[in-house]
Amino acid sequence: MTAERSVLPGRFSGLSIKLIATIVMVIFAVEIVVYLPSIANYRASWLDDRLRVGVVAARVLDAVPDVMALPRALTDRLLNSAGADAIVYRREGQSQLIELDNAVTPTVAVTADMRLRDPMTLIMGAVDTLVGGGGRTLRIVGEGDRDESLVELLMPERPLRYDLFTYSRDFFLLSLIIAFITAAVLYLVVRWVFIMPVRRLTENMLAYRQAPENASLIIAPSQRRDEIGIAERELAAMEQDLFSMLRQRRHLADLGLAVAKINHDLRNTLTSAQLLSDQVATLDDPKVQRLAPRLVTTLDKAIGFAQSVLDYGRESAAPPVPGPVDLRTLIEDAAFDARLVGHPGIAFNNGAPEGLSINVDAGQLARVFVNLLKNAREALESVTAFPTPPEVRVEVTQSEDGLVIAVTDNGPGLLPRARANLFVAFEGSARAGGTGLGLAIARELVEAHGGHLQWVEQGRGTRFEVSLPTSAILR
Image 1 (cartoon, rainbow, N blue to C red):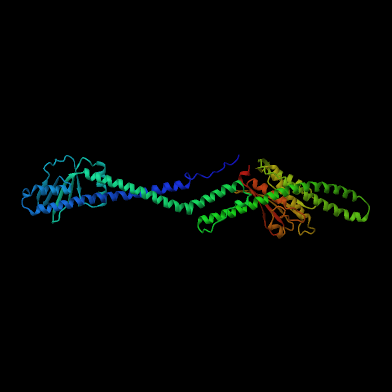
Image 2 (tube, rainbow, N blue to C red; image 1 turned 120 degrees about the vertical axis):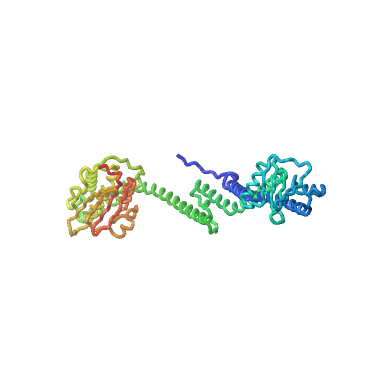
């Protein structure tokens, strides 16, 4: 299965258009919040202007004892300047009224009491005028310029509603202009500061993904000190590490092929030399008899080294195929392959309990124990003097965390040099001439089963523990 190739979004389908839309929406949301008190204030100012004309009319009414004596032209001028059909002045329990000759008696009236100035009342009044106004009569009530005096104006609500709609239209157009200008300015700033650097990062990642071995595609980080600068520097470091790793792996792959061919030919050559050395060893010459065993031993080591390198190169990455295996039998067979069973000088103690079955790949786990038991045998064979009889034993401990299988010997232990690179191929050998591949392969096989292999420090000898998860235990 091939991974789907990523493609950068177009100019108007990526972060840019989302940023513009977000800015415009936020500005409109703010404008809506501002619009309601703004239109309430506009309505209140409009009504206050009409009330001021009513107060002037109240002064005139208060100055004359008889309203009927006022000239009709004066009263009409007062009413027309306020846009009202009638003005009522109330003081000390008395009411005075002036109205147009053709005034129509209102059928539906709504009161606007300008003595109530709390924001919610003003906002609700403005919304009510916009929604329900048009054919109603507006009754405006306010205080006069004398103590305990009231002024009332009766007028059509249609002019107020028209002015409110005109104000709303202008407010909307102005908000739209401000929103787009603000969005454009913010977009240019954010695009320059954020969008373009992010797009540069994404373009580089997509290009480098297509050709990770092209060093010219490694991004050149800027001098920014913010998160984008950190991302650029980290991406550059990651691409450099990836480039070096891929190059090294390619070189190692090429080198591995060459080494495999060389080892194959070298093993054949060493095998022929071993056959010749065996024939030479049969000669009666004393010098030949003295040197032949050394020659045979050296050839055996060289053949073993070449074979181990070939085995490691052919090591497959196939996952284990678990199946029920009797643990005691598995360890017994591994000890036989490691030449511990029946060894004349080393005692072997298989401490695995009878009847304990585990769900593992028998072939892979057998290789692990053959390697560990073989290493223990070789470590004991390299020592001539023992304070106690040489022994290799296998101990099995079962708990809630899983199963621990320990391989222990009472030999000289590991050298500090071997401990530092114990599971590193070609570097973790505990004996002279070794490749260190055995423990590296063993650890990979154990980890493939969900467990882990570790060396445990103790007073004398060597102890390796193979830990398997609880799911591997069948009984």
